[in-house]
Amino acid sequence: MPTQVENRDYSTENSSDLQQIYNIVEIFHSVQGEGARAGIPHVFVRFGNCNLRCEWCDTDFLTYTEMTAGQIIEEIGKYECKNIIFTGGEPMLNDLWPLRRLLNQNQHHISIETNGTISIDDGLIDWICVSPKDQLYPNTKIKQRTGDELKCVYVGQSLSLYDEIISGFDHLFLQPCYMENESVEWNGRNFAHTESIVKDNPKWRLSLQTHKWMGID
Ligand code: SF4
Image 1 (cartoon, protein in one colour):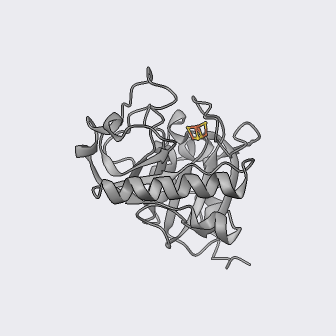
Image 2: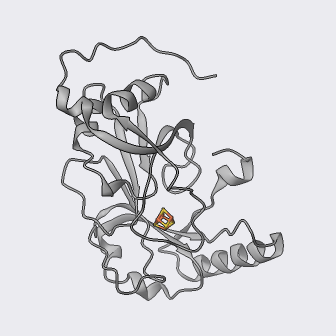
């Protein structure tokens, strides 16, 4: 069970920020399972809707409820955790500034997982993870070309796809595509192939979705 923390008084906070509406699929406390911040507990805020439709997407981002920023902050406040991840769906379809301003008051660290098709204002996010989908959408330009990590789902594409943007990122990750409706053997072959590509391209690190092995969100 999450630890409840003292209720906050938001009466002095900007009321229009508190009233901002977001489409939220779920908010939950878990450990980041992939990428450079793997192993760190976070509160995940999953936003509804996405501007892409990737064939391996495992998120039902079209089932959501409307929540105000005030309700989201209250939900986040149930956990004694300062690390927040905005994920989706595509969180950058939203104006995230009201949430940023409200979370600032409690010194939260905000990460984002984004497909990179919408650029991110300076100062909005503390940790930017861009996961481009160029292999499926060659005509969709990546607008967010800098960040902390570039995490690419590997489905056999050439790594030269990322030549133009890798210099903008501190960490480069290649993550095997995990297809839930494929066999263990199919996924195993894809894992082995991704591992061999990383061995041949040591600038890249292997990212595994360890939370899936643990059977957690
Ligand atoms: S960009 Fe991400 S959330 Fe959107 S469809 Fe692709 S995998 Fe799903």
